[in-house]
Length: 115
Length: 113
Image 1 (cartoon, rainbow over the protein chains, first blue to last red):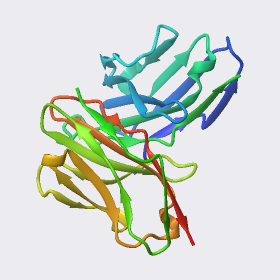
Image 2 (tube, each protein chain N blue to C red):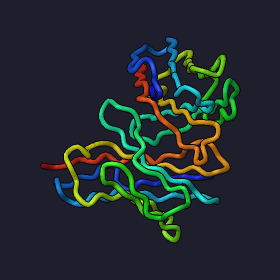
Image 3 (cartoon, chains in turn red, blue):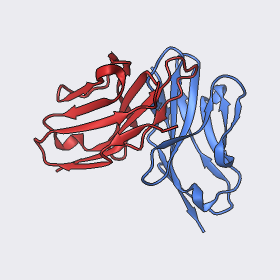
């Protein structure tokens, strides 16, 4: 069974540019999460989808971040325009809707560097 | 709300020595606790989880952790470190009423030959 995949693995952009990160969850997982780790700090929650609906977006830092999950399958996270402080590793995770302990399966992450 | 504190951002042990990585949590409701490991250039891999059953939890690669409610701790241990254990380790907490994970800042483990 394929795990959670993320694309790209690395992205280097200049301040002011736009970047779109993609996450493909494990097939059949209706829960999809985005997290971010800024260097040296903890991995922090950004938002949670249940199928195509945003269940919780309390962790989104500001309106430069836009997440979508059209059709309830893969998700994209767009940063527009990117700022220096957006640099970090963006993780995606998924879990089954009926997961008793909400065990989340994580992807390898996308390392974003904003210059 | 929940939170996790991992004491020691960097831990070094000799090969064959005991590994002890500390995790303390804060939660107003019964927690579910997880340890994840991240090897270089890889994603987060689940090591073990506590879900209110046995307080001593065994995971993969010889790791185990003990849930101690009185100490609000969930420390990760391994009796004998192996070179392949060098990685970054993350402790996380969630609950049955929430969905997001709250992570600690991570502990980077170095194993010295």
